[in-house]
Image (cartoon, rainbow, N blue to C red; front, side, top):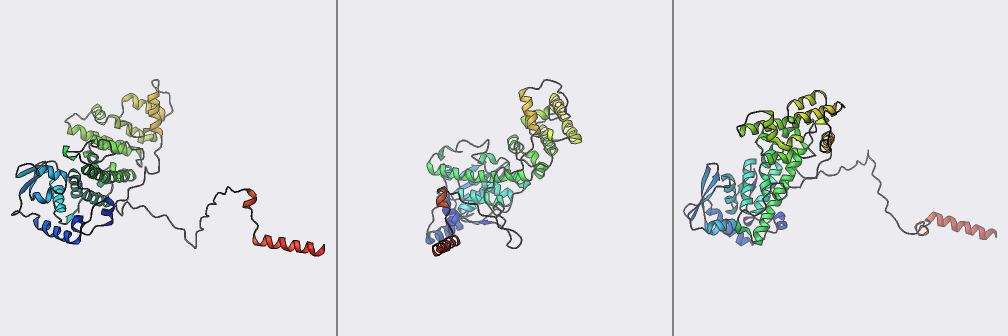
Length: 396
């Protein structure tokens, strides 16, 4: 069980010092812990009601203006309205509950991927960087191919560096510097988590592409994965079949007929992502039978694979496409992961054994001194030279 508490209610950690959070004295900490913890879920002293949730799954939460108005400009803007009930229909009720528990100095439990993911979304939308950091670290601990697909879904809206990221703060009230810094910090943790998730998908591409959760991704989220040059698939046919499954599901969602043309329309340029010319024999025939390419494109692939003359003159654009389909994927990872948890901690360099391995020689340092200055005689050379001079003087 992962228990996270508000840093205002506990001793300040090193990570919080590095993040720039101000510390408070022990007396203030104890007072805030005592007051806020007693106010959580306190219906008698509450003066505001939140109804939070999406897709009809809404819950009612009592709140206190004097506690929440000081936590973020988002809460301050919401509580400035003269109403006793505030509807929060853009945050999952599990994430909103974890956000309230955090601000009321209650232990926050991030035990499941769904809860941690919803809490990350709530922390971003309500500008709570410490909670966003802890959610990102907890999700990084649980990362595997399936979890990466689940948390990457729509995560780009919380990131600053991924395609499709939001280009402006969610509310006009977030124009001050403090709010902008909080938003940037939240985006940084989301970017780091998305970066690590994409590296996990690269490394375990077969498991990700055969996972049924791939079919639930949006077109933009799918493009983030299949367009990666460093996707380490054991066989390009795995990627072709995954795209076929996704396009079939897309046609069903949009109530379209399951024809090859409709599937190609659903995929768009993603149909060109597999390296078709890395396949041969029955595997290539199977990939072309799925008809993700146009008939003429399939004919060109067959002709190039069998080293036959092309059925039509090949233009520069088609030639570039055929060369890309024949280019092997790089074996090196795209980048190193961001150290968010023990899972993404960089591996230590192997140390050679003193018994069975030789130590590597230290590289020589370059010297730019004149030749005569670099060659200094040693002790034995000077002793021999002196002895020779003594014999010469003796016999002379």
